[in-house]
Image 1 (cartoon, rainbow, N blue to C red):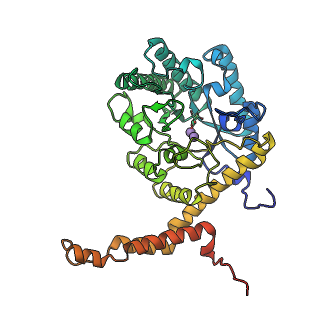
Image 2 (image 1 turned 30 degrees about the horizontal axis):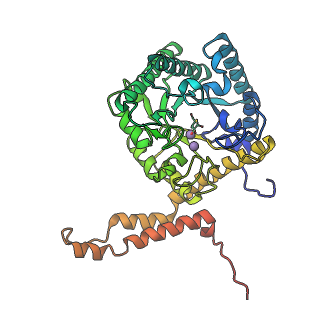
Image 3 (image 1 turned 180 degrees about the vertical axis):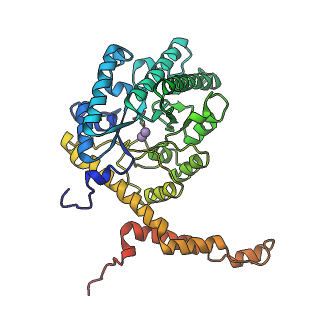
Amino acid sequence: MTACGGGYSPQTRRKYFISGPQWAAAYQGQALFHAPTRPPIGFEEIIRKYAQIGIGYWCTHDTDVIPTEDLATDRQAVIVSRIGRALSENGLQCSMVTTETFHHAVWAGGPAAEAPEVREYAKFRVRNTVEIGHELGARFAVYWPGSLGYYVQGAIDELDTLRWYADALNAACERDIECARERKRDTLKHCLEAKPFEPQAEILLPTSDAMLAFIGSGLLKHPEMVGLNPEYLHELMWGGAPRAALGRALLAGKLFHFDINDGYRLKHDVDIGVGLVNPLDWLNVLVLLRSHGYNGPFNLDYKPPRTTSAAGVFDVSFPTAVDRFITLWEMAGEVISDPIIKEATDALKRGGGAPNPRDAEGVTAANRELLTLHELIAHRLVQILLGLHRGRTFSIPG
Ligand code: GLT
Ligand code: MN
Ligand code: MN
């Protein structure tokens, strides 16, 4: 790591709204076909390690830290106060809380199953998470309804299921309004996270766009409290362009929270560290977010590699992910103020000056270099990414 250079100090890292999930650091390397490779690790240790690295925010699922049977009991209160102490001793803040609605057997039929008691239980769980969030000072609540779907066709009614899912979100928002009033805090921002496949065979809200439609469907009592937590890789998984998906969320005023990672198109949810697969696309994503004033969290929702030791997780995996993000974020600032990109963009927006906008041939002729300028901008972006804009070239021997 020392030999690599290019790292940032913990103080610098803390200036960014970067959050570290409990589940990412506690990931033991287990997955569908994989046995765990690392020992368990608790929240106190993770919060301490995040503090040393300079990750200023922490987030969690309810059951990452509270056993299912302890939820909403005195034992929950004890754990939550231990979390509060660990956060304050280490100068961290809890940014987000989320409800696990996919792991426990109770969710086999999803959080909006036909059985009313499953749905009552789902409401209980999301309300309880909202209370934990207020107790810990969180500002965001995330919902990944990955189990909202089916394996076999025709058994569930899609409209009923979506209505019932909205009931759970309504219960969370209403509890939030009460808690906020009692504690004189703002209500939380409730963020839906889409993933196109896994763990159900078919997913009812598979994309961020499907979720935007759901938010606007009239089923939510407080649509203004509900927005999105897109995940970079989840947009690639269905073959979408993350930048375009984020653009649509920004236009709708619904980009509340953002899970950052990397991976491949049309593949499963590999959750690779940010910028390791698509650094150029990441640079462009951050240019878009900077240009449009996104100021929500960047949540490191990725999985440290399976053979990495616990030391490797905190000495290499997390700090390098944070540092790649910071570098790409700062480079995005360079892109926005780059005089060459600005000149090319201004020229594009001025147009070629065709005298008659009804004359196809004339308009075409006047804009002959439109895509030349696109390519020039793309070249410049690669130059900035590779440091070539600072005059770095390679000499050919001989
Ligand atoms: C799960 C999922 C992630 C979500 C988490 C929040 S759970 O790990 O794959 O993308 O962000 O519930
Ligand atoms: Mn995620
Ligand atoms: Mn993912």
